[in-house]
Amino acid sequence: MPTRPTRRLRTFRNPTPERDYEIAMDCPEFTCLCPMTGQPDFATVRIRYVPDALCVELKSLKQYLWAYRDQGHFHEAVTNRILDDLVRALKPRRIEVVGDFFVRGGIRTVVTARHP
Image (cartoon, rainbow, N blue to C red):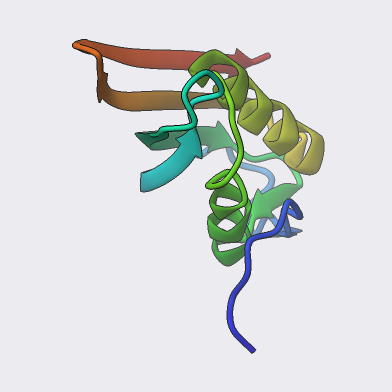
């Protein structure tokens, strides 16, 4: 069965919940659509978090990010939505999501959202 985009984030138990440690993921192939023009927007999404009881499963994260490919979102909104969805799924001790969007119209946009 081929891989498909999905909004479901799967998790697994943190193997070392007694220790604070950071998990860092860079996703350089993020794509969504500009809600004004319908043109594609490309970005690197950087996720850094300190897990509590749960960690995100990487294939589900890839499929989750893939689900944005055909949707229109402002950079600010999509970065915060990714953060909100990860917070809801993981309940991490700390998390930061950075949307580093490629230049469009001569402007590069970097959006950083944090929890707590």
